[in-house]
Image 1: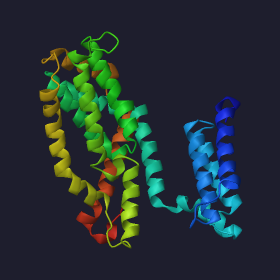
Image 2 (image 1 turned 180 degrees about the vertical axis):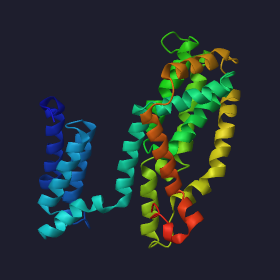
Image 3 (image 1 turned 90 degrees about the vertical axis):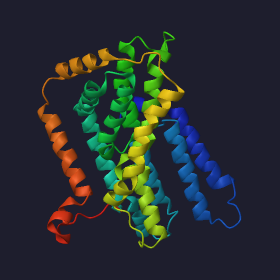
Length: 310
């Protein structure tokens, strides 16, 4: 970590807040001292993250270390260390971390862009077709991109923006109503829809699964396949209707976009054939979906079941 990655003022503010809550502000009635001290560390950590006092990974490691050293969860040092590290024993944490790594691969190999341009090349003759192309692109990559911000803002948004710019539609020129506003609205509304369709489409979903399992004593265990099956119909219905509704409520000025198809095809031509890295990503993508959906168990029996995501 470079010295330039450390911001002194936000760091001092977060430390001051921790000390204030720890030593000066008394815990409310019914709240133990240890619980209040844990809250102080939590608030200080959040402030440090918001203020970007250090890279978020460094802040997280420091917070975990402080929880272990201060013994706010247990007076016994060994138990305090176990409590501080307990999150790393949760398979959901590893699921989120690994899926985020895979989603970075999706972006770095440009496979996400290829998928987006492919759908636009198919459906881009009209503005509403571009809207559906963007929605379908999100739907395809959603299962392996647990960051809805990375998916909507890092992969789909640049494609949407470049398409709008090719028609001379931009906020800077005051021409957003041509096509940019419509595509931006579709992009924005698609993101939460796809995020709700798969456990792995956004980071909070696995936490929801865990909270439900904990609250019911594991009587209700939601697997990846169960979630996807339950969300399939409402999700597809929303994706089918949403671009139409936005088109009716907030119609774009440009209705036909033959140039978009040509633009997408030119982009695909520039990208050339699928690279080796993209083929690897497609293979990993497909394998994960097959395993998460429980296909081996369906075909070969329960002995080949993968541990459910719960």
